[in-house]
Image (cartoon, rainbow, N blue to C red; front, side):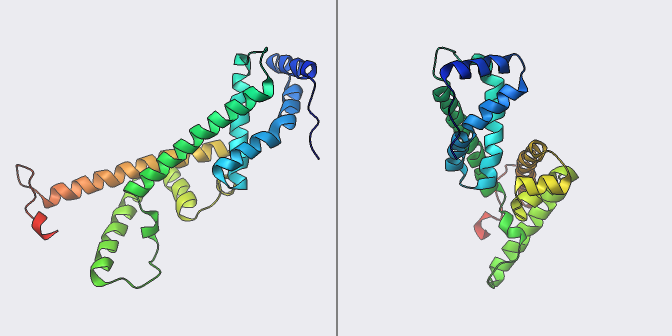
Length: 211
């Protein structure tokens, strides 16, 4: 059942009450516009639970930005514009994180391959798995657990929050920090391995012809 849209005067009153700290007025604004914001978020993430999380984040940021709204403008137009911009920022952030994971960390290598690889592939995979396990082991327990639950076990933010008894915002923060630190550890271990196998003073590889 669609939510009845308020008149401009009613909405103006609600906004003013929100700015004065009236939580009930803010709840009313959220109810009026939640479906529209959710639909925008869903177009960006494509998953119901992630769209719910993003919708909550968007409304939190809208609430914090409410004082910047030009009261002469159309509130719904402003809300949609802010929502889209925040969703675009979220999409870019997630894409950047995924690119970091894809470039520096192949989480799939921590699980057995579905088909039998050849001898050289087996050896290379074993080396990569060892590298990733070593990088994971270097993470603090809180960050390692968050990354494993999200990227390896593929739990939702809500499932992780429930399991760890944490707020979803804390879970997301730990996952982001954990991914960044994991990628850093992988780069560090690769650099250490390169130096260990290439001790020549000029830095040129003595074994490059055989790689």
